[in-house]
Amino acid sequence: MTSKLPDEDIESAAADVSTLKKRGQGVQIVYDSLRQAILELTLEPGSPLDETRLADQFNLSRTPIREAMVRLSAEGLLLTLPNRNTIVAPIDFVNLPFYFEALTLMYRVTTRSAAVHRRPEHLIKIKSLEASYAASVARRDAIAMIATNRDFHVAIAEAGGNHYFTQLFARLLDEGRRVLRLYYQSFDDALPRQYVDEHSDMVAAIEAGDADTADALGAAHAAQIVRQIQTYIARDTASGIALGEVLR
Amino acid sequence: MTSKLPDEDIESAAADVSTLKKRGQGVQIVYDSLRQAILELTLEPGSPLDETRLADQFNLSRTPIREAMVRLSAEGLLLTLPNRNTIVAPIDFVNLPFYFEALTLMYRVTTRSAAVHRRPEHLIKIKSLEASYAASVARRDAIAMIATNRDFHVAIAEAGGNHYFTQLFARLLDEGRRVLRLYYQSFDDALPRQYVDEHSDMVAAIEAGDADTADALGAAHAAQIVRQIQTYIARDTASGIALGEVLR
DNA sequence: TGTCGACTGTTTGTATATAGTTTTGCATGC
DNA sequence: GCATGCAAAACTATATACAAACAGTCGACA
Image (cartoon, rainbow over all chains, first blue to last red; front, side, top):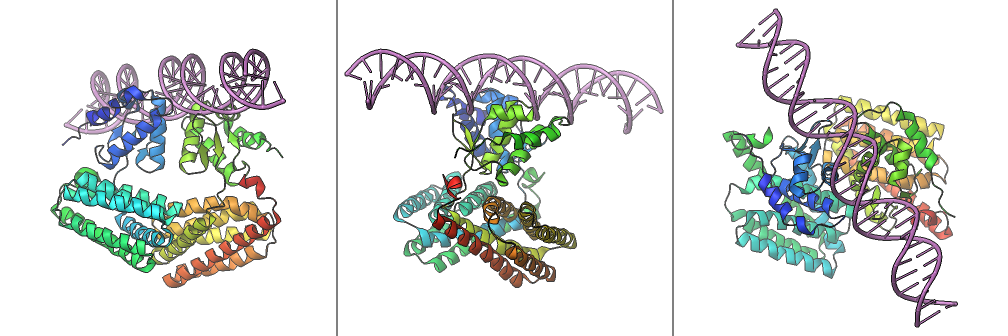
């Protein structure tokens, strides 16, 4: 199965804004579009990006395209092969254990910090995103679920106030969006409901300022996710299908 | 006091390689030069960078200069003001407590992980850098001390094997280089000797595979550094000098 | 004398052109 | 049938050109 070129998807995203782009906005539009396409797997891991083609699709010159690509490379979402082309960073299943380790630590640290440093405006935002997540679970909208779940936890991290943690955590959650996207493609919605409850408990602990409980809930939440993904991968690897497309 | 333009410093660095630069090397050279200049405070925090001038100094066009600057911005070492100029990122003394929090956690996590995952080739590299650090302390070479100390701890993080931790830790240590540079300007060399001993203990714990001891030593090492910098800043803030230049 | 506004110079953001490298396809020889 | 070498195409890295935005200055007017 040869991977088709997802020209139309990106092109449509570009066409929406091609008329009202101003000086200084071009790079941002390209960056946002590509980033979203990568994280939602519209652009498959490993697929090549051609500067000239993207320039045509976005109605820009190659210069802002390159700048957006450099930024995405710096974040690890793209891989630049010198004098060769640039590809979407493959999902690194080999290092998944280290990913889980980092993710778990950040879940704990950010939730704990939020319980200590949260202020009213943080709680408002967190609760709003908690509701958005619950709504997307009710709608069984997998893409919205993944995106709002990410935003929910980033909001908690922001309440913690430590910019270094927030940034690493956001990067981990984004990276995780790609794995989760694979994951959610093949299972019922029983577990997301469980997440809704866990989110609710976390918010309560944060609001109460109970750092230890928040920490424990963060750890449990992380363990939950890790266990599910591991189960999924084990099952999938055993049957030997589907992942081959992405592993390459 | 108006900040002088450190043209010559960067220019000399550029001149060294201007003759033997090849396609694909230009951006890397600019990136490395600027990065080093920023971290060693040759380029003062807050000082502006002019693309055209840098292009002249490096004998390149503005395109590779911009690309290097975009990468440095993504790492937080530069601050881009849209349609205005780009400046060296100021040192954020306000968020220093969060910096210390992150640094301490990473010291603990990386040292612990190293004790678990280290392999012979890691130990060889770590010991080599430990010796380099001791040598630069003996020479009372502050710049080398700071740089090798950074490399020593990054090597430990690499032995831990978790790329996410290594990357955050390296970024924190680099950011710290700028603070330490201020710090080392005004004190005797008694404390670096203490660091040499602490490094030695850490290596021993890592080699023995004693994770808990390694963790504790990492925490103690971090606390040591934090306490010293806090003392320095408190004293300096009290006297009201020197920091004004950088705080702006 | 102070304030507002147009003008000018400087610098960035984007477009286009040029040069150099890698890949790919084909042809030729073994 | 397969390997090897050459040529052309494709694409990237860098250079240059152009246009928009902002900062500072000077002058007009209140």
